[in-house]
Image (cartoon, rainbow, N blue to C red; front, side):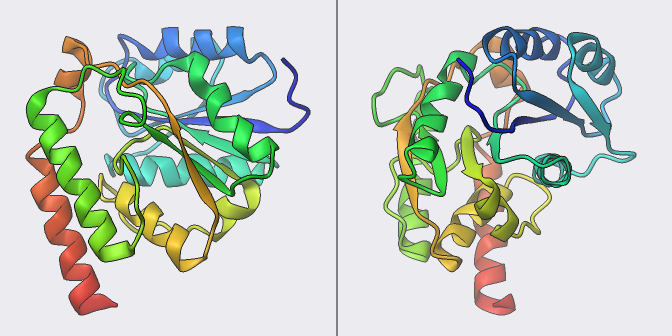
Length: 230
């Protein structure tokens, strides 16, 4: 399918040499007109080499800054290159490449500025019990502090128009950037919709992904920022 717009897929990556090449190759096969940007957040394996060999644009951080910083770097590059739409997805294989199209449909129909993937709208994801509990708590936290009523709040599978990406300001370098993006949606009164997506929990993704215990640090950091810095 030819979308007729400049679409960039941004993948923040850290030590994903085992899977990144396959993900990039699958995106290229399914969406040959898309540009793929892998931001290597100072991996000490062959992540950058595998991504480049598969056909991605590779940007490298000279120190490890965190997923939020990698997303920010990828967005800046995509905007500089004239992207009309920017898709974010994780580089550990948790997201299903064929579902990128689900994120694009509301943007092309002009129903939203930002599209957020949700693993809970149609629960096809094998979410571990503890992770499910933490994520549900995050939903309540987001509703209480931002007023957004979402079914999933820390899903890295999302897409936005160029205009929305230009408005969203990110300062959080690490995992708290996901909450920061939601805050920016409210601050700029951007329209948004959720679409059902699958999140695959494998032995590999659970080993490489965010630990449930990190949620406490994210909440603490965001509370501090809201109470004392805003």
